[in-house]
Image (tube, rainbow, N blue to C red; front, top):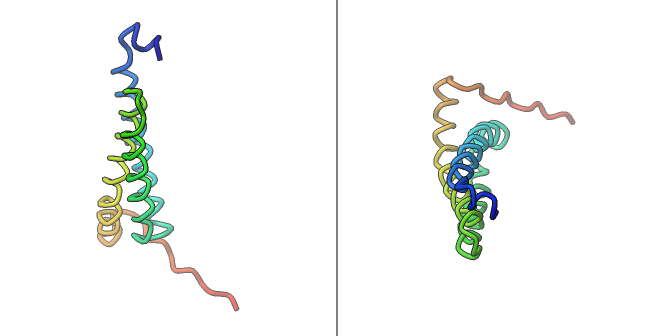
Length: 103
């Protein structure tokens, strides 16, 4: 951590990590909607609440910022799940085929 501060790389590192976090949530939303539909919205909301709470409790600015970004991305993903459902209905993304039940 001292290295990042000493060489003025903390902001750049936070920016890169933010880019990666947002990039991670894009496929999570797509796969989440594909496999679970919008029923998994509460997972993103719970994860967001935990990350935001963690960002308040963590004293180090670097980690607090990354937790806040994670929380904001989680909350944003709740809305994106419902948007993803609309994109699937429009045919922009594949719809999961119905499972056949074997008895």
